Every structure is written in C-alpha cells, then in structure tokens.
Image 1 (cartoon, rainbow, N blue to C red):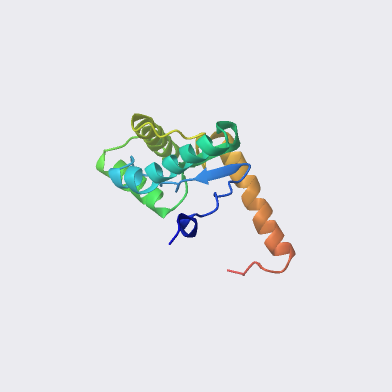
Image 2 (image 1 turned 90 degrees about the horizontal axis):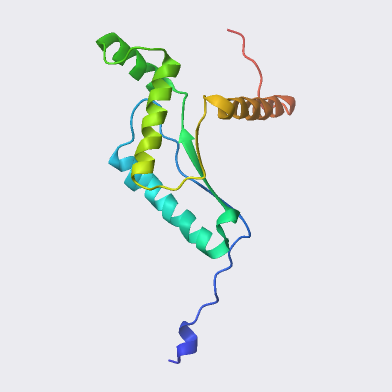
Length: 147
C-alpha cells in the first residue's frame, strides 16, 4: 500500500474553546483522584488547545461546588467533633482556599477557579439558575406542588 492510504486530513480546531473540569464539593481538600482523574486531563487538553488556537482563545474553568448535602453534613460532623469552628460559609471558604492551593501546587493553569456560592460567582449562579427555572416554568415544564 502506498503512503497516501494512511494519510488523514489535518484536524479542524475551533476558533475559541471553553474547557471545564468537574467542580469538587466544598466539603474537603482535593485528593490525588481529583487531580489525576479530573484536572490533569483537562489541563493538558487546555494547554494543547492554547498551543493550537492561541492562549487568548481558550478558557479553562472550574470551581468549588458550594451546595449539596455532603457539604452540610461534613460541616455538621466536623463542628460536632470539634474539628472545625465556624459557619457553613466559613467551612466552604476554608476548603475552596485549600483546593486552590492544591491546584497551584500541581501547576494546574485554570483561567478561573471560582466557587458557586461565594463572591461574584454566587451572584451569577443565582441569576442563571433563576433564568433557567423561570423559563422552564413559563413554558409549562415546571409547576409548584402544594405541600
């Protein structure tokens, strides 16, 4: 067979891209599974795209998930055992800060690592959630059930 049979066309790349990595819960520090299973792959892909289409054309985003029963329950248990003193928000801030530090230590280059319930990200999350739920309700896909 000739060499031509094995040639493939060059891949087409997008003009711009957003790469995301899963949002770890705000109830603990990151462990190696988070780093090796989620962030390293996404970081490598984001770096690859930056090399191909330009750094200014790629956003790599993630953040701490500040909502959910695992966070509330972890906070409750740690406060009850004396391992943590502070509010639920203090607990999430503490873990978000630890998560950011771990990512920096592994040289994971995120464009944005925010927290869904903290700062400006909390405002955006609330606005987007309200928009989605209001739109679903307006189109008859949601209805309030009486308690």
